[in-house]
Image: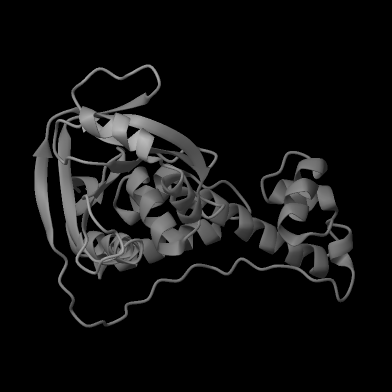
Length: 284
Protein backbone atom coordinates (compact mmCIF):
# COMPACT_ATOMS: atom_id res chain seq x y z
CA UNK A 1 0.00 0.00 0.00
CA UNK A 2 2.89 2.38 0.76
CA UNK A 3 4.34 1.77 -2.70
CA UNK A 4 1.00 2.69 -4.25
CA UNK A 5 0.77 5.90 -2.24
CA UNK A 6 4.34 6.83 -3.20
CA UNK A 7 3.52 6.36 -6.89
CA UNK A 8 0.42 8.53 -6.47
CA UNK A 9 2.46 11.29 -4.85
CA UNK A 10 5.03 11.12 -7.65
CA UNK A 11 2.26 11.54 -10.25
CA UNK A 12 0.86 14.47 -8.24
CA UNK A 13 4.28 16.14 -8.42
CA UNK A 14 4.41 15.65 -12.21
CA UNK A 15 0.92 17.08 -12.68
CA UNK A 16 1.66 20.09 -10.49
CA UNK A 17 4.75 20.93 -12.55
CA UNK A 18 3.63 20.32 -16.15
CA UNK A 19 3.78 24.09 -16.72
CA UNK A 20 7.27 24.29 -15.29
CA UNK A 21 10.38 22.22 -14.63
CA UNK A 22 10.02 18.55 -13.72
CA UNK A 23 13.06 17.10 -11.96
CA UNK A 24 13.49 13.36 -12.46
CA UNK A 25 15.55 12.94 -9.26
CA UNK A 26 12.67 14.57 -7.38
CA UNK A 27 10.16 12.10 -8.87
CA UNK A 28 12.30 9.18 -7.68
CA UNK A 29 12.76 10.80 -4.26
CA UNK A 30 9.01 11.10 -3.81
CA UNK A 31 8.44 7.52 -4.99
CA UNK A 32 11.22 6.30 -2.62
CA UNK A 33 13.07 4.41 -5.33
CA UNK A 34 15.82 4.94 -7.89
CA UNK A 35 15.18 6.90 -11.09
CA UNK A 36 15.87 3.78 -13.14
CA UNK A 37 13.38 1.70 -11.16
CA UNK A 38 10.65 4.34 -11.44
CA UNK A 39 11.12 4.65 -15.21
CA UNK A 40 11.03 0.87 -15.70
CA UNK A 41 7.99 0.52 -13.45
CA UNK A 42 6.22 3.31 -15.29
CA UNK A 43 6.77 1.98 -18.80
CA UNK A 44 5.59 -1.52 -17.87
CA UNK A 45 2.59 -0.44 -15.78
CA UNK A 46 1.40 2.36 -18.06
CA UNK A 47 2.71 1.18 -21.43
CA UNK A 48 4.32 4.55 -22.22
CA UNK A 49 7.78 5.84 -21.26
CA UNK A 50 7.72 8.48 -18.54
CA UNK A 51 9.18 11.25 -20.74
CA UNK A 52 6.67 10.50 -23.49
CA UNK A 53 3.80 10.60 -20.98
CA UNK A 54 4.96 14.00 -19.69
CA UNK A 55 5.30 15.30 -23.26
CA UNK A 56 1.79 14.16 -24.19
CA UNK A 57 0.27 15.52 -20.96
CA UNK A 58 1.81 18.93 -21.67
CA UNK A 59 0.51 18.91 -25.25
CA UNK A 60 -2.94 17.96 -23.91
CA UNK A 61 -2.94 20.99 -21.61
CA UNK A 62 -1.54 23.18 -24.38
CA UNK A 63 -4.51 22.26 -26.58
CA UNK A 64 -6.90 23.28 -23.81
CA UNK A 65 -5.10 26.61 -23.42
CA UNK A 66 -5.36 27.25 -27.16
CA UNK A 67 -9.10 26.61 -27.11
CA UNK A 68 -9.92 28.42 -23.89
CA UNK A 69 -7.57 31.42 -23.78
CA UNK A 70 -6.31 34.18 -26.06
CA UNK A 71 -2.68 33.58 -25.07
CA UNK A 72 -0.16 33.78 -27.89
CA UNK A 73 1.10 30.52 -29.35
CA UNK A 74 4.68 31.36 -28.36
CA UNK A 75 3.62 32.03 -24.76
CA UNK A 76 1.87 28.66 -24.57
CA UNK A 77 4.89 27.00 -26.17
CA UNK A 78 7.26 28.46 -23.56
CA UNK A 79 4.82 27.61 -20.75
CA UNK A 80 5.06 23.92 -21.61
CA UNK A 81 8.81 23.77 -22.14
CA UNK A 82 9.33 24.57 -25.84
CA UNK A 83 12.03 27.05 -26.81
CA UNK A 84 10.39 28.13 -30.08
CA UNK A 85 7.00 28.26 -31.76
CA UNK A 86 8.30 26.01 -34.56
CA UNK A 87 9.40 23.26 -32.17
CA UNK A 88 6.07 23.50 -30.36
CA UNK A 89 4.12 23.40 -33.64
CA UNK A 90 5.95 20.25 -34.82
CA UNK A 91 5.32 18.46 -31.52
CA UNK A 92 1.70 19.64 -31.42
CA UNK A 93 0.99 18.41 -34.95
CA UNK A 94 2.70 15.11 -34.15
CA UNK A 95 0.13 14.44 -31.43
CA UNK A 96 -3.01 16.26 -32.56
CA UNK A 97 -2.56 16.19 -36.38
CA UNK A 98 -3.47 19.90 -36.57
CA UNK A 99 -1.45 23.10 -36.08
CA UNK A 100 -1.76 25.19 -32.90
CA UNK A 101 -3.62 27.86 -34.90
CA UNK A 102 -6.10 25.30 -36.24
CA UNK A 103 -6.67 24.03 -32.69
CA UNK A 104 -8.34 27.35 -31.81
CA UNK A 105 -11.19 26.66 -34.24
CA UNK A 106 -14.49 25.14 -33.16
CA UNK A 107 -15.26 21.49 -33.93
CA UNK A 108 -11.60 20.61 -34.47
CA UNK A 109 -10.65 17.08 -33.40
CA UNK A 110 -7.96 16.92 -30.69
CA UNK A 111 -6.43 14.14 -28.60
CA UNK A 112 -6.17 13.77 -24.84
CA UNK A 113 -3.50 12.00 -22.81
CA UNK A 114 -5.41 11.21 -19.59
CA UNK A 115 -3.74 11.63 -16.24
CA UNK A 116 -2.38 8.41 -14.83
CA UNK A 117 -4.16 7.07 -11.76
CA UNK A 118 -3.23 4.14 -9.52
CA UNK A 119 -5.86 2.14 -7.71
CA UNK A 120 -5.68 -0.93 -5.52
CA UNK A 121 -7.51 -3.89 -7.05
CA UNK A 122 -8.13 -7.18 -5.30
CA UNK A 123 -7.35 -10.28 -7.34
CA UNK A 124 -7.23 -13.99 -6.74
CA UNK A 125 -3.90 -15.10 -5.33
CA UNK A 126 -1.88 -16.75 -8.08
CA UNK A 127 1.58 -17.98 -7.21
CA UNK A 128 4.69 -16.64 -8.93
CA UNK A 129 7.65 -19.00 -8.96
CA UNK A 130 10.96 -17.18 -8.61
CA UNK A 131 14.42 -17.63 -7.14
CA UNK A 132 17.20 -15.21 -6.18
CA UNK A 133 20.50 -15.85 -7.97
CA UNK A 134 23.93 -14.31 -7.38
CA UNK A 135 25.80 -14.37 -10.67
CA UNK A 136 29.31 -13.34 -11.61
CA UNK A 137 29.96 -11.06 -14.60
CA UNK A 138 29.20 -12.62 -17.97
CA UNK A 139 28.69 -11.75 -21.63
CA UNK A 140 25.96 -12.27 -24.21
CA UNK A 141 27.20 -12.82 -27.76
CA UNK A 142 24.82 -12.58 -30.69
CA UNK A 143 22.98 -10.01 -32.79
CA UNK A 144 21.21 -6.78 -31.83
CA UNK A 145 18.72 -4.22 -33.11
CA UNK A 146 17.53 -0.93 -31.66
CA UNK A 147 13.80 -0.51 -31.06
CA UNK A 148 11.48 2.19 -29.75
CA UNK A 149 9.39 1.80 -26.60
CA UNK A 150 6.82 4.12 -28.18
CA UNK A 151 6.32 2.14 -31.41
CA UNK A 152 5.11 -1.32 -30.29
CA UNK A 153 8.26 -2.78 -28.79
CA UNK A 154 6.75 -6.25 -28.43
CA UNK A 155 5.92 -6.54 -32.13
CA UNK A 156 9.41 -5.36 -33.09
CA UNK A 157 11.08 -7.92 -30.84
CA UNK A 158 8.79 -10.67 -32.15
CA UNK A 159 9.68 -9.80 -35.73
CA UNK A 160 13.39 -9.95 -34.87
CA UNK A 161 12.97 -13.42 -33.36
CA UNK A 162 11.08 -14.60 -36.44
CA UNK A 163 14.03 -13.55 -38.58
CA UNK A 164 16.47 -15.81 -36.70
CA UNK A 165 17.47 -18.58 -39.08
CA UNK A 166 18.59 -22.14 -38.40
CA UNK A 167 21.98 -21.14 -39.79
CA UNK A 168 22.32 -18.33 -37.25
CA UNK A 169 21.30 -20.59 -34.37
CA UNK A 170 23.82 -23.15 -35.60
CA UNK A 171 26.57 -20.56 -35.18
CA UNK A 172 25.38 -19.28 -31.80
CA UNK A 173 24.43 -22.37 -29.82
CA UNK A 174 27.93 -23.99 -29.84
CA UNK A 175 29.23 -20.83 -28.11
CA UNK A 176 26.88 -21.23 -25.13
CA UNK A 177 28.89 -22.47 -22.14
CA UNK A 178 27.34 -20.80 -19.09
CA UNK A 179 23.98 -20.75 -17.32
CA UNK A 180 21.34 -20.20 -18.42
CA UNK A 181 22.18 -22.26 -21.48
CA UNK A 182 20.53 -21.98 -24.87
CA UNK A 183 19.19 -18.87 -26.56
CA UNK A 184 18.47 -15.70 -24.61
CA UNK A 185 17.03 -12.29 -25.40
CA UNK A 186 18.26 -9.20 -23.56
CA UNK A 187 17.00 -5.63 -23.25
CA UNK A 188 19.74 -3.06 -22.70
CA UNK A 189 19.14 0.21 -20.87
CA UNK A 190 16.37 2.60 -21.87
CA UNK A 191 18.01 5.50 -23.71
CA UNK A 192 16.93 9.15 -23.48
CA UNK A 193 15.10 8.90 -26.82
CA UNK A 194 12.97 6.02 -25.43
CA UNK A 195 14.78 3.30 -27.38
CA UNK A 196 16.54 0.13 -26.28
CA UNK A 197 18.97 -2.32 -27.83
CA UNK A 198 17.60 -5.85 -27.96
CA UNK A 199 20.03 -8.75 -28.20
CA UNK A 200 19.43 -12.33 -29.30
CA UNK A 201 22.32 -14.59 -28.40
CA UNK A 202 23.90 -16.95 -25.89
CA UNK A 203 25.73 -16.55 -22.58
CA UNK A 204 29.38 -17.44 -23.06
CA UNK A 205 32.95 -16.99 -21.88
CA UNK A 206 34.26 -17.47 -25.44
CA UNK A 207 35.67 -14.61 -27.52
CA UNK A 208 33.10 -12.79 -29.63
CA UNK A 209 33.30 -13.83 -33.33
CA UNK A 210 33.72 -10.98 -35.81
CA UNK A 211 30.19 -11.32 -37.21
CA UNK A 212 28.50 -10.97 -33.79
CA UNK A 213 28.24 -8.27 -31.10
CA UNK A 214 28.85 -8.63 -27.37
CA UNK A 215 26.97 -7.32 -24.34
CA UNK A 216 28.96 -7.36 -21.08
CA UNK A 217 26.91 -7.66 -17.88
CA UNK A 218 28.37 -6.98 -14.44
CA UNK A 219 28.19 -9.31 -11.44
CA UNK A 220 24.97 -8.77 -9.51
CA UNK A 221 21.84 -10.24 -7.93
CA UNK A 222 18.99 -11.52 -10.10
CA UNK A 223 15.35 -12.39 -9.49
CA UNK A 224 14.61 -15.28 -11.84
CA UNK A 225 10.94 -15.86 -12.66
CA UNK A 226 9.96 -19.29 -13.90
CA UNK A 227 7.38 -19.53 -16.67
CA UNK A 228 5.47 -22.51 -18.00
CA UNK A 229 3.20 -22.11 -21.01
CA UNK A 230 3.04 -21.20 -24.67
CA UNK A 231 4.86 -18.09 -25.85
CA UNK A 232 4.41 -15.21 -26.11
CA UNK A 233 1.27 -15.19 -23.93
CA UNK A 234 2.77 -16.82 -20.83
CA UNK A 235 5.88 -14.62 -20.83
CA UNK A 236 3.90 -11.43 -21.46
CA UNK A 237 1.69 -12.21 -18.45
CA UNK A 238 4.68 -12.69 -16.13
CA UNK A 239 6.34 -9.47 -17.35
CA UNK A 240 3.20 -7.61 -16.31
CA UNK A 241 2.98 -9.33 -12.93
CA UNK A 242 6.63 -8.63 -12.11
CA UNK A 243 5.99 -4.89 -12.22
CA UNK A 244 2.41 -4.84 -10.96
CA UNK A 245 2.73 -7.46 -8.19
CA UNK A 246 6.31 -8.50 -7.37
CA UNK A 247 8.01 -5.11 -7.07
CA UNK A 248 5.12 -3.32 -5.29
CA UNK A 249 4.93 -6.06 -2.64
CA UNK A 250 8.66 -6.61 -1.96
CA UNK A 251 11.62 -4.50 -0.83
CA UNK A 252 13.42 -5.03 -4.15
CA UNK A 253 13.92 -2.54 -6.95
CA UNK A 254 15.21 -2.82 -10.50
CA UNK A 255 18.90 -1.99 -10.95
CA UNK A 256 20.24 -0.27 -14.11
CA UNK A 257 21.29 -3.40 -15.96
CA UNK A 258 19.90 -5.45 -18.87
CA UNK A 259 16.91 -7.76 -18.44
CA UNK A 260 17.14 -11.27 -19.87
CA UNK A 261 14.63 -13.71 -21.31
CA UNK A 262 15.75 -17.35 -21.43
CA UNK A 263 14.22 -19.91 -23.79
CA UNK A 264 14.57 -23.67 -23.47
CA UNK A 265 14.71 -25.90 -26.50
CA UNK A 266 11.40 -27.37 -27.67
CA UNK A 267 7.96 -26.40 -28.90
CA UNK A 268 7.30 -22.77 -27.87
CA UNK A 269 3.59 -23.21 -28.60
CA UNK A 270 3.25 -26.01 -26.04
CA UNK A 271 1.36 -25.41 -22.80
CA UNK A 272 4.28 -27.03 -20.95
CA UNK A 273 7.06 -24.99 -22.58
CA UNK A 274 9.49 -23.61 -19.97
CA UNK A 275 11.18 -20.20 -20.07
CA UNK A 276 12.49 -17.62 -17.60
CA UNK A 277 12.79 -13.87 -17.07
CA UNK A 278 15.93 -12.61 -15.30
CA UNK A 279 15.59 -9.20 -13.63
CA UNK A 280 18.59 -7.46 -11.95
CA UNK A 281 17.59 -6.36 -8.46
CA UNK A 282 18.77 -4.76 -5.25
CA UNK A 283 17.20 -4.00 -1.88
CA UNK A 284 15.73 -0.49 -1.57
